[in-house]
Amino acid sequence: MHISGKTTRRLFLASAVAVVTLLSACSGGGEKSAKSVEITNVSYDPTRELYQAVNPLFAAAWKAKTGQDITFKMSHGGSGKQSRAILDGLEADVATLALAYDIDAIAARGKLLPEDWQKALPDNSAPYTSTIVFLVRKGNPKGIKDWGDLVKPGVAVITPNPKTSGGARWNFLAAWAYGRKAGGSDAAAEAYVKRVFAQVPVLDSGARGSTTTFVERGIGDVLLTWENEAFLAEKELGKGKFEIVVPSISVLAEPPVAVIAANAKKHGTEAVAKAYLEFLYTPQAQAEIARNFYRPRDPDVAARFKDQFPTINLVTIDKDFGGWASAQKTYFDDGGVFDRIYSQK
Amino acid sequence: MSRTASTTEGRTSQALLIAAAMIFLAFFLLLPLVAVFTEAFKQGIGAFGQAVMHPDAWAAIRLTLLIAAISVPLNVVFGVAASWAITKFHFPGRHLLITFIDLPFSVSPVVSGLIFVLLFGAHGLLGPWLAEHDIKIIFAVPGIVLATVFITFPFVARELIPLMQEQGKDDEEAAISLGANGWQTFWHVTLPNIRWGLLYGVLLCNARAMGEFGAVSVVSGHIRGETNTMPLHVEILYNEYDFVGAFAVASLLAALALVTLIAKSILEWRFDLHHGGAVH
Image 1 (cartoon, each protein chain N blue to C red):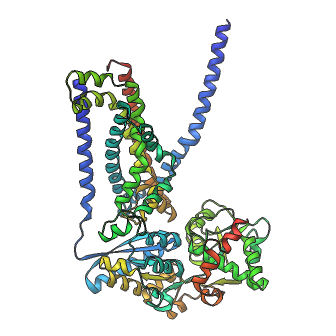
Image 2 (image 1 turned 135 degrees about the horizontal axis):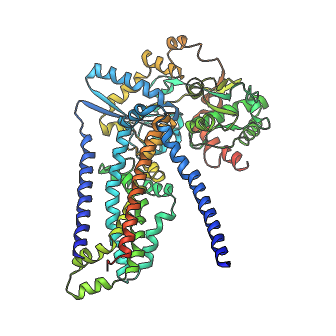
Image 3 (image 1 turned 90 degrees about the vertical axis):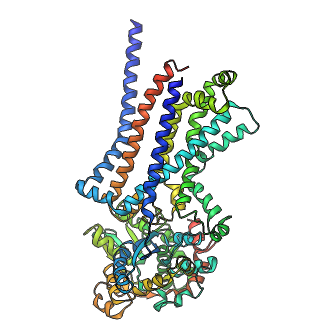
């Protein structure tokens, strides 16, 4: 009895030592010199590759200017989900989300940045734009040419959930714009969009989830997605397995960026965060943006890459949907049009 | 004659049952496991090493070990204390306590995560106070620890309660009557009796602490190199179409689980030996 008591004690002692060693080994990496600064960029799903490419460029420029090293902390997810996380206390220095409403929400409910944040940078604080296109399988077996073909019998449409995904809200509005143009009224648009969602077998929470569903799991005949995401899938994921179909009408998507002022102030990163976002407008960053399939704002860079981006008839959120605040309330808030359409499915 | 027939029949159905179990295991356990390792080493050991040694992957591994190293000892202390109290004493609310211990098993991990967001989030119950004192809980390591502790709460206690119930309190009463104090009784009598069961509980607790996804995903914030645990990192790499990386980290997680399983088998074997032998 006594011997086994000793064994037990030794066992416990050994595990205690192991835990302490582990703890000290783990906390060793936390030291930071005053010569370095850390920025947390909370972004939406498809920008992973973009910021992986742009961050080192800014780090080099900032180091040349100030001598400071920058460490970037990236977080990606559905735009609505990320906005929620910042509201709940995720301490982002900058937010680079899919649509203005998600940053509006942070300003209105969290008071973490001024309500007129969108005026802080040029072009509605959106350094790049994109639009919504279709991705279909090689040879376009279902013959999908435009929005009208989505509601043909037997066509499975893949789009994320507009409640959590910014891209999905752009998808929804682009479909709405088509329905309104084709049918001549909002009632016709609603009937059309309802038929589209009746053909959706799975609603992922973010754009990247939907791409994976379509590309990797092979579900669906057409993926409604960001132009940049469609290019990425077509050129890098399944070379020769997919085709991009450009519809007759789509929406001008402006993914905005903003310094989350309260967090930046707390971390002492106001200057570097502001410089980081301003850097996105420089020709150097704009070219990288275009190489990652986002439409650049800079006219010279846009001219250089003009063959890459097809011309599409684009509606805008401000002119055609009365701005994000109104569109969000009408279509996506609880009890809005999307709930009505989807609950009756 | 009839006896032989019945045994033969018994043997046939036994063989069939075993074969069915084996086929099931092969399809639902072995095959996925093999697939994980094949994918991980698809582009050679170099690519595997690169994926695992990437600073973000390395940070995820360290964080996962840290979380386990904090939450497992906490739950050992709690589990032993709770099962000791429940099995050796009768007090009002005993059954309520047992029910509470089971709570994390019955609540979905996502809900467990959201509980902490509601409590400690910027707009949560304690959020404003925490912000004032510059204490970060959710979207930081403490939140992940809390969520993991909550999720792994029942493992040690659930393992010990039946064991201690079965053992009764005769040994302890004998020790007390011979003049041992409470601490001596626990250290020299109770602990040696439960040690194998306790280690078994620790292993289960550890496996879950390292593998938890749902609750941790809610409170993590998914910041690379900072609040990304191994399971979260696997998802991120997968979403980035970095399949070798995703499966490399996944295979490491699987390897950790396998080590745990082997340790568990050894323990079970020793446990049986002691249980059957003359411990008392």
